Image (cartoon, rainbow, N blue to C red):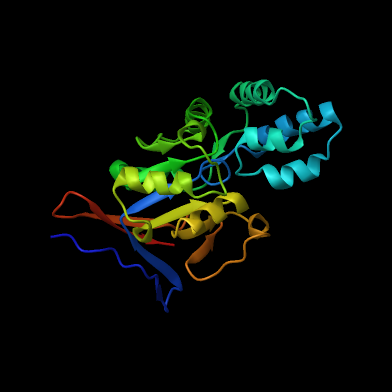
Length: 238
């Protein structure tokens, strides 16, 4: 008989490590598993220069958001939004120089059971596969990409869909994210959230109960125990 995952985090006073017990782990991609900053900035710089737009403003609001949503927000009225989005997507797919995995990401993915993890990204499936491969990371069997949802981040649809696909209750899930839009989506889904990367990434999302922060995955460890029903109890130490 299986037992529900512990919904609370436990802190070990001696090491100050945070221990989370969950049934599923969901990962954002860009900025969370894969560092593709240079390419993303290059593509949006070219877009902003073409239309005389504020590059810094676009960069500030586009991280973690579907490209099509950003195009609709900033492209001049009357633009062919679908064509522009497709063009930007092709630019991103054709550029992989400098794409690398965050420290510890490869080892963590390898240590987690594939049937208990999912990728939830604002990138489309083709781009996600290209970037994961370029970074040397295995693509999880379960992936919720841009074309899998009707509402992108910060809406929780993607994270809720991934949890359902894995057969996990939102309360038994932890999300690894880096962008304000993704953090908001995970929190709206009722999931515990680990913010990956620099504190600047959370300038619009203060850490609150049910949220933690790590610079990368170098110190993250995991153990997995199989349940009687075939599921997994995952214990992550941050």
